[in-house]
Length: 243
Image 1 (cartoon, one colour):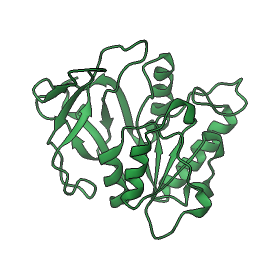
Image 2: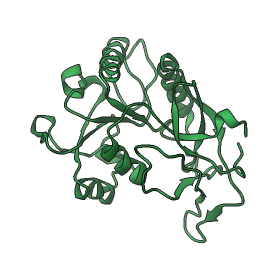
Image 3: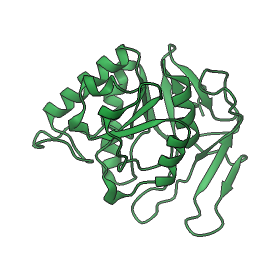
Image 4: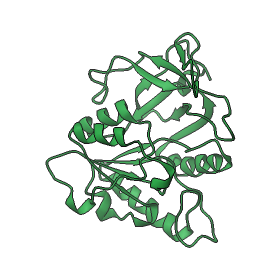
């Protein structure tokens, strides 16, 4: 793997305590998070998940509980509901992936977004990030065809921040584990964690590396990142990792 592509998680100015919790507990489908934004307590770190995946698509309630037990305030909003005022209430905004623009759409769904809703969303994100807010982009949601369109849409926005999700899957066969039963999903781990504000106390991170197709939907996997010099990597693959 090219050295510049080995970064797995990167950091722009983000609140330390919030990002530590998200770094430890990211894998989930957060569509059913329900805390009201207007009730966010100012003395707790606050996370907003922006997604149009609803409860029918599943939600890891144990994940939500761990965030709340860690002292987080957690909320969610659909793409068409975001405003600069809403973003300003949160320390970190988490977006699984930005939806592609559909000129015929009337709003936003998990698959597409209208031009007007997209313009509103990106303007709100620009203002939030320029004001020092933290954004965590998880990448395409699934391995169906819509995943590639989500990747292109996400990269179209990230390009202005000199970042890109590269369509290459990371695999480290020397630091590897595969579940022996049921889904048999595969994982690698890394201890290549540069010192940073959000990685303090983190000695090892497991990340999904499965590349097999499972009924039309790809299982969890990890892509590489291409970054400008102004970015700071907080998690990298081991020297034995490749893509």
